[in-house]
Image (cartoon, rainbow, N blue to C red; front, side, top):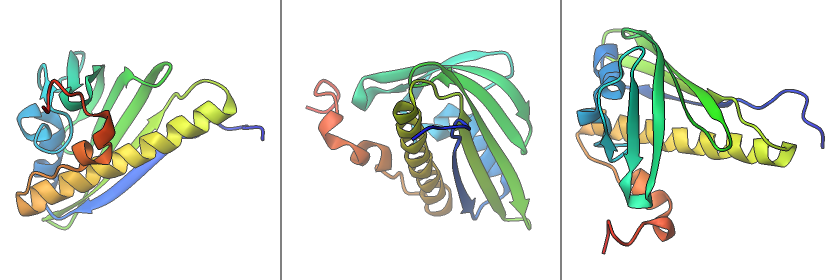
Length: 160
């Protein structure tokens, strides 16, 4: 099979919270660490580089913040599978208390099979992220979705 257009991963979810709360959950690592990564070196700010860690897996990524439009859009570049990839989140208010969040990633590289696998993995990961965001913001429950997704890959040092 030959690929003519490089795949873009996409995930989306309605979150029943005001757009400022949902947007803020991505900007502020004190909130984001409750449902996605386990540690961050700082808040997202345009032009800033932060590091996100998933300590349970011994994984991390460097995040370069490219654009922020308050309560509308966040664009970052991060360490992708084989390259620096661009990730964009958009936030569309629905009435006063709902937000439709869309996340996408582009820039996958490698042969056709590798690119398709990377895009599928990214889509699955973003779906877990958005489901965790929804559970946390709507119900105040800290989900273990990211940890429970791949329990065999958990680094022993963080979970004896």
